[in-house]
Length: 468
Image 1 (cartoon, one colour):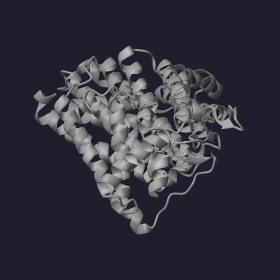
Image 2 (cartoon, one colour):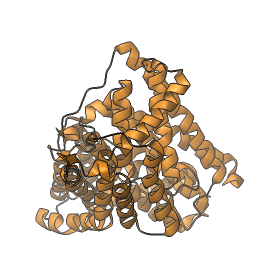
Image 3 (cartoon, helix red, strand yellow):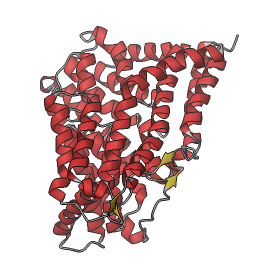
């Protein structure tokens, strides 16, 4: 029979991946795309569809929901209150002052726009290196971007690429507390600073290229006469079917002191990284700090009476965005589980195993991690995929665990931001746009730039293995 054969399974898998990219790019809801892809794979591999959807697919989704559900909810609530209180606008104002100092007060120039985008990207990188979890990063930085980009008249379609670029640099840097780096420690039994020199050089190259690209884009924005446009209050950006409620309402009352505005972020960093509390509880404490510091803004005074309007709006918008976010990430994990059932998956594993034996371990690790990140649209699954192949035979492949760790962090950062990747879809939706509006800049900062860092890291590990 053709159905269920290895070559038919491989062909179907690649066609499904291409179809997923096309549909997401055209604005279809990625939730339906993931479910539809799972159904097609089940049918084409001769599996009972209902058993796959109600069994394997939901098992994979449930595992992800268990880990992410309340992390995402508390992160969204914190981001919403951080914006509604005026703190996000205050941080944005401080960053704008830095840009004005660099450009001598000319906020309309191409250089000012380039500096503004570069400042946000570097700020996102630094905050993530200091301990802001990557799952929270978009929700914290997007409201800051809204205010800064509006004041400097920069189009919204740059926001996801700017943020993802900064987070990507932090993710690959040695010693980073971001989940990608810490998960590698768990999987490969290594230290966060593994392959220190190749990692630092690769991350530095990524930073330079990101800043260079954003400075060039500042010039293009001015030349083409592009402008900031206000988003709709409720968006269907990213093809999410209108399920997202854009966060970040403007504060009702007086501005917040920018020094005070950083306190909730500092508390989140300290509680999560040094006190050792979980991310969920750390977010709750940061929310409480927002209430204590900015209660006059959060509890709006109307006709000399306290109103819970701002509080209610913040809670409603965060929950409205939380549900489709969780559903999307769960469906992605569910599809990854279905992919692993197919004969195509076993063939791919064997292919990379043979490549490692014939071509060399370093090149094979890079290719395997890049491809698996694209295959499942998820860095976590990409790492497990790579570990299954290479960890058992490190010596045979002329590899060490630190090499494997650092190369994997660079490689899985490249194509886990494919057009159907949940992180890409969520950020695009939250800025009220569609994938075709934002993905060009995401592709540069999260695919091309990390690819350069990966090549440098591989060359250093290959020619100077003692550095790793």
